[in-house]
Length: 359
Image 1 (spheres, helix red, strand yellow):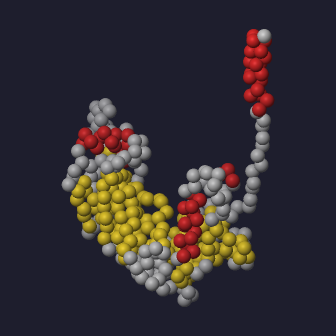
Image 2 (spheres, rainbow, N blue to C red):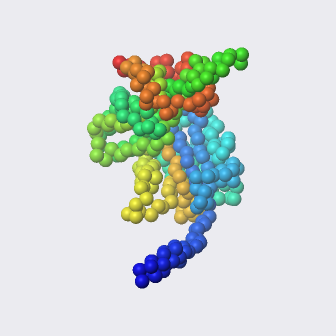
Image 3 (cartoon, rainbow, N blue to C red):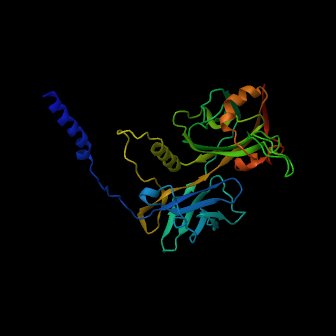
């Protein structure tokens, strides 16, 4: 009786998975492509950049093809006094302003106008440039923690600024750096013999590394107080000086809300409690139909910048190698790390930058 039962139980188990598998074709919602706009004007010297494209299909949102980029639009930035500059197409939907004398000014309001080849004209809301406070100082801390295969130790750079009291202020920060890198090098010349795993030539360089994270803030809870905001995390891959540039922008409320919504959607964990994603509609709309709103944003900002140099003298080679070895690549340093400079060539523009030494 037991053998009989086990025999049929085994047969049932073998056929059970086959009974549970069912092929389901889930319909994919296809919508018409939307105009996507990303651009700004600032008080920094031109040219100013406007990027135009059409949104991709549901399954290719981040795989834009040449057909997605817009290359035949008429693009103009205009101020509230009637002055304007046209923007000329360069590549991949990127347009640059053409008038070197058209510069953003505090107190002026600016409008972006886009005429597409299909006859539609899109205009932005007027964006007024409000003043941004200066960067008073910089705070630098060394973070000795590291994550294998993800990042080595790092310097955390924060800007210190004083928020003007009695007014709503919104901020955005960007930063970039040239950081020292090391590779296993390359033979010193064509006639040089093979040097095995480690070569002494072409093993060092400095690499340009922008911070593409969106970093915005409202003064809702810090009105009139000091602000200390982290703006860059500079990885310590090898010995040498870190060259870091920070920029602090004033932005308007609608721009702040847009980037906050962007962060809310991109930082979701995939929980069933997460709200459904929604299109990131911005401040650019069809002139003939206000319900036809483009994705993306056009901003107008005052900007201040600061450059610094950080040189760590306390690092020991055996300790650095034990941490950074996962990030050392084979070959010529300049070839394996994109956007790099020679080890003995400092990036231009840092001669008068404030220097910090860590011993």
